[in-house]
Image 1 (tube, chains in turn red, brown):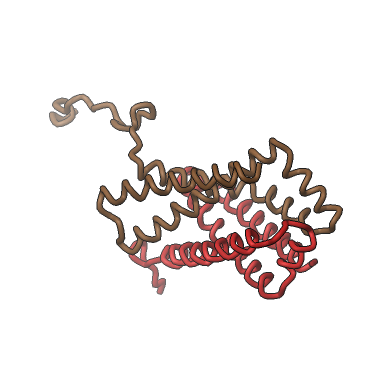
Image 2: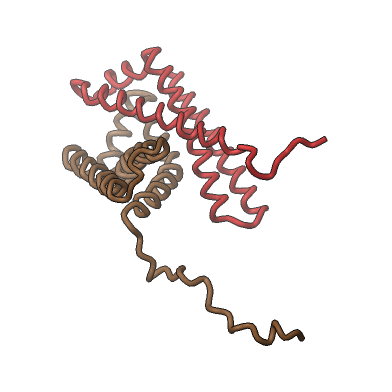
Length: 115
Length: 133
């Protein structure tokens, strides 16, 4: 038996909630990041590296990267779903978006853990 | 042919209200569509931002490359655009979070908060732009 409902099954609730949860996390991190960089006596290479190489900042920055990618995936996917009707084109755009975002996450991790 | 189809009135031209030059966007719609536009812009230019982030941290030599790139007027304009996109997305997003929990739903309040989102994000972009140019 297939236990599925076409409507009212709340398939979108998880994404709706995830988009808001990641948004709140990113907003808090943005404020933290803005305060920290504005409080730097001088924006120089050593100060910048020292800030991001600290384990706690790297941890929170990594969570920011993950949140950003998940948030962007939901948002960009919604744009494709709203404006692109042909199933093939929509699928292709979904896949390109997904692969790009996974690649960007890997790139960001590489930048952060190289420090 | 049945009588019903013969007596049918001529169909009205549809859609009736999708004339793009006649559509009037109220303030909350402008904030909403700019939320989408700013999000899309940030997504499209994410590789540029990651590239700059990469260059700023790789080595002290690449930090100089980073400084040189971000001091170019064209790059500054693009970054200022992205800064506005981030700030607008941020402010409008917070407004949407409040609307989600049923705060500020009445029309006068929704208009005021839309105006505040546009004003705050533009003002902050302007201030940061002037300070860092």
